[in-house]
Length: 483
Image 1 (cartoon, rainbow, N blue to C red):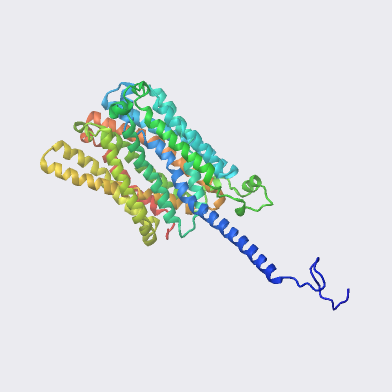
Image 2 (cartoon, helix red, strand yellow):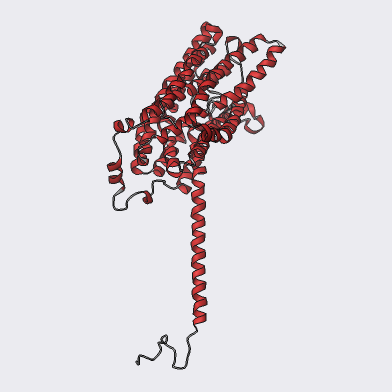
């Protein structure tokens, strides 16, 4: 072929001219289709990525839901199954609450370390699947030892909290931490709000809803089974959501592909002792443990106090009234955590919020005693002041839970390596589980002694908590400045 002869596509004759315009149109059309497909794929991935935090917050609700659903009727169920007097109910309710946390403290290191090794998503599905069975079996308990056994079983599978917390830290940035963890703690507190409502609404279904459940011998023999069945079903939805829609935040994009996952994880994971000695970790752990001591004491004692008759030092509420008060506090939690907490965190920081909560805790504890004294008085003026105190309890009692979000956020910021968040959160949750193991049993026992002996007119537990709560100022002072 001569060098001057123009090149023609194969199959064209000497006098045929290739249709470059049509080819260009086809190429342009193919490029547009490919670009459109790429954009659609990108939009799909972005939508899935945007849903990760809301879905994780939904999954976060499963563990506290399983924990708090029994609160409106635990005292009643204990008395029913054990045939014990009102003055001794507090001893047993504290034990049942402590069993959940005691078993949890033993297994959390396992859940956290396995999540770091195997993957967050896989272990989260395992935890939620096992957790679904605990509330169901607890609802069918007919004796105190069965209640203790199945309450402990629920605690054995309660590892979802530390896994979700670690996944959130991989997904958020320093700029979005406060808002992300405000949603995380709100999900926890929303479960505290929904759980008691479910428990109060579904317990004794035959007597509450005779038109629907009358004649069903199952719920006549097991009046506490329905709340457990519904709670177990909700936990099962959490496992399904995790399996279908949640991605493992520890993806290959964060890891060198040349290094196998297990080997890389082992090479970068410091020992537990070294991790605890990292700068600021001990201070954050102590602060978080003190917050959990105050919160778990408040929840345990208040639940028993709301049920205890007024002449003995309580409020004499029925399960539905207890659920209504907890629901009102849940609404307050939403306002404090979603609207107030992010603003305060941006403006003043974590330590300042902890100082504020340290000042609010004694007021909340004193409010419970004041409400009982007003109910004992019974006059019209006392009744009016009782409602004022009740409103103050709802506002302050929900506001102090900002300490939970601040303590969690302080701990996450102290992590020396993002790859050990699961282990660090497991250590923290184990420490706080020990606190939650001892605190409910001890605090309700002190309350029961105060009620039985009428020490300080039944307000002994509240008086001790008022003395203990200002120590939060000291533990928060240990956190790094500027936090």
